[in-house]
Image 1 (cartoon, helix red, strand yellow):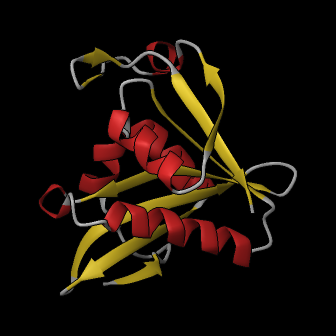
Image 2 (cartoon, one colour; image 1 turned 30 degrees about the vertical axis):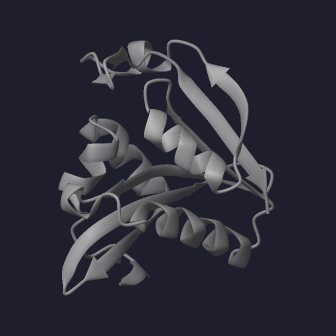
Length: 150
């Protein structure tokens, strides 16, 4: 598997990006601001993440997705650690991530990768998404914010 920066001339892997965030408008917004990295295996894009610079030497991991047929192989963890290392290499001092209250697997993954819960943006998904989102039988309402120092 190879992980690389997607060039601005390349088409983003929309199918994967929309797995992690169902709002194309939101994804377009942070693709404009950030850098998109893709994981490839046998010339196929199997994973993606996006890093967006924030204020005060902070970067945010705003989208991370793995193709469904590759779930359970540790690729998500590899992508998170790659994002952390990329942020360090770029001189950032802090990395943040946000995920839905219903995203149980993602919450576990981020904590296994060293992130700590730092806050909750109540009703974030209710206010910012037209369609209701359900995961694991739970309505996605709040964004759980996590971060770690680099």
